[in-house]
Image 1 (cartoon, rainbow, N blue to C red):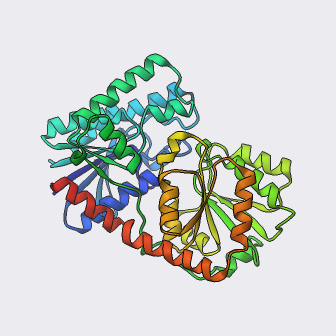
Image 2: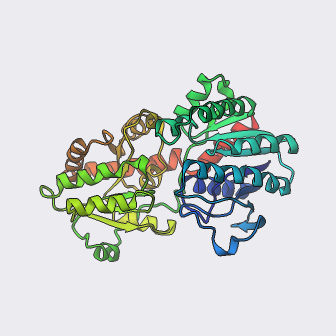
Image 3: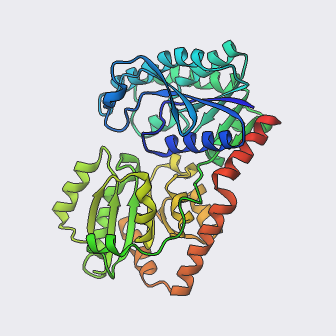
Length: 405
């Protein structure tokens, strides 16, 4: 089978979309399929294109044996909505040239968001006489509207028309969650034309490890019960609520410590809150390479995955869940809906209401007092679930079967 993956983000950038495309492509290549990636020059999250990629409109390189076609993008990390839109459209147009440089293909899988890239995927599939698979990880523009990121009514109407057009014209839709799959079927797509392509995890890389004593000493976390958040410090995560939770347990449970690993647009705001509340039980560790995350999990007792209290997020499956459970780390999920059901059903985590510091503090105190045998059972359940349902091998099995049907 010949496949082109069209996406705005790819390594060396880090993040869930980048990892998913890389891992799926690597697994397809391993199985003997022809796979090429068409993507932008690296620019996320700081909006700076690395020096070795600057001054170019197009280049072809190999990434772990995967042919990667890169094309120009106007980077805009913290600009206005219209600047971000200009960034999206710059790659939407330049990527068509890169797509033409790729080999003939049977299938073009196009990532959304950004929604507009679907135009390139659709037209590219026409030119290459290929099937167009629209990989939807976020319902756009609905999600942007509910988060208050888009308010222009004319633009919203135009984006909704484009959204419906692309859903209609796609041969099949790959949805990141069951909620997105249900949404597509509710909007007229046949159930056999929608399949799940969820976030997954490299279960060989993310394995349970002994506690890293050196790192515990470095962070002064020896004999602490460590609750770790690892990922983007963004608005959607509602990490300010986590800091208010830390304030509640600071005096009553001094051996509970919160480790926050990552970087993002909310970093300065969060550091300011920490200072204002004098949170001696919170450590900001900054961003780390993916290769260091198994070590981070080794010193973590519970992984915290929080979200804002927004109805839209009830259908979310945050990618942060899967590396945690794969390392045998139970998850404290501050949210509701699909992910909460998965964790509860398989007994590998606990659920707290989103953006509710008081109730979250109560759950954290309960986890702090958890019986060791019950804790070990949660660890084992998570590892078992990751291997059975969310390994990249299983995800690619489902992808190949859906395309071949």
